[in-house]
Length: 327
Image 1 (cartoon, rainbow, N blue to C red):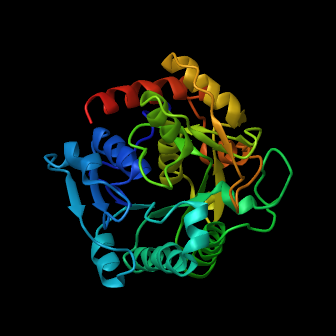
Image 2: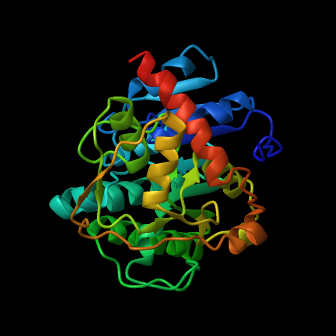
């Protein structure tokens, strides 16, 4: 894995908000395994304590059950912290269309609270999750920083706002901020349950149960599906990046493009099934095609993803087979 050679000063402390979630728990585990101190900050509204249970006995690990909407909690959590990886947010484009006020409160004000607390407490690097959804209705492929379209959902707008605050906090206050625009991340710990579950774990769960999954739209929409270990690398590269690279956002993807129907058939083949999907209406607010140009992250962060889709999906399917066998 290409994040194994990323190092930080001995005794460094990382704060991972949303650290009981899918991406956060993987990052917390990776940082602990590298020998550093980790604080996980999560109110468990979408994260799961099971994701971080194996880390609880590590003396370098601390769990804080707190909410990023509470500025005092953010201030206390960032005290004596070197690196913040801010992943706490509510995801899902469809849910944001149903609950725009809640998304503004959590994804914008919550991130701003954490940014301000990091500034006041002298955090070295503030890395935060953005999203490929900021490209909105732009049809240009591959997606390139600076070529964004009009956003299509409240979720996308919250991430665009976070990026603007990231720029301002670097320019006005000197806080080194780095936005990571994640492209359709998948892998171990991703929640397969609920109405807003991501498509890959949802397909795997339903196919293993002998059910017919629903594909929203014609299946010809494309995504830059990105294995979670690539995202771990992207976040850690940002934590280790130069001050000159701060104050902007970077595409963190695999640099590939897969059609949803092909992904579905790949999963069917791996599971030894040939269940035909159901086709439903397209989802409001969804981008049609997505493919990351990762050249800016390569140049400024040294980002070099190790996993293409084929390698990542095999690992993910193996993990879910084991997960469902024991749950």
